Every structure is written in C-alpha cells, then in structure tokens.
Image (cartoon, rainbow, N blue to C red; front, top):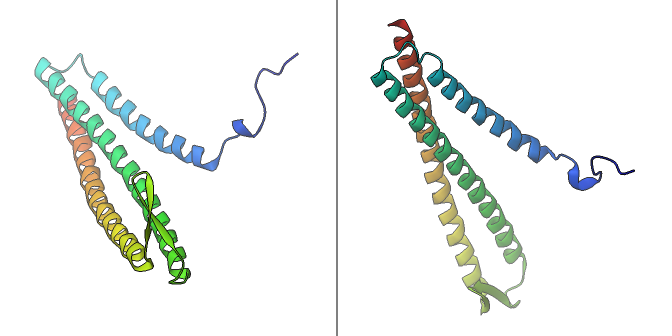
Length: 162
C-alpha cells in the first residue's frame, strides 16, 4: 500500500516559501478587505456611489499589482548588484597577465583587466541608478495605495452614513 502523500526533501517547506506565502497572504487580505468593503453596503448605496466604489477598488488592485512588480524588480536588481560586486572582487584578485574573457552575446571576447573592471563598474552604477529609481517608484506607489485605501474607506463610510 502506498502512502497518500509523497515524502522526501522536494516536498519540505523552505523559509523562503514561508516568506512568499506571508506576503501573498497580506496582499490577498487587502484584496479581500477591499472586495468585502465593496460588497457590504450595496443595498444602501445609490448607483453612482457603487460605480465610484468599484472604480476605486479596481484602481487599488491595479496599484497593488504594480507595487508587487516593482518589489520583484527591486529584488532582481539587488541580486544583480550582488553578483556584479562578487565578480568585480574576483577580477581584482587576479594578476594583470591573466587572460580574461567577457561575454558578448553568445560568444566570449578576450579583454584586458582594465576593460573588464571598467565594464563591471559601469554595470554597478547602472544597477544602482535603477535601484534608486525603483525605490522612489515603490515609495510613490505605497503612498498612492494608502491614499486609495483611505479614499475607499471614506467613500464607504459616507455611503453608510447617508
């Protein structure tokens, strides 16, 4: 008789998976709260208020998705920056006579240590600029999300009061 659930290392939960589930749970809780707020007082709101609530909740959800995308891009940029920094550290350790190859499309091109180092430094600067842009975008989206949530709550409370 076979066990009903396969066992082994592939099915164990990792801390990383718990983190992603937690952040997913938070985002789904926010979505559920917005949807519940939209559903709750339908009997008491007029048609124009219902339409406005629906538009605001759609904007809120779109902003939440965009914020998630920016967070993912920010994590990718951090990984790229770390990898480039490690590569730069390793390149600086080798002697000047060591042949170094740089990836250009599908081929590798022989380059001097100075060329590789300057290329990696330029890449580090580009990633840092991209990270700064993404961080400012994330801050903007977080404020926008809070504002939309407050607007939605105000609209709902005013509709409930009328």
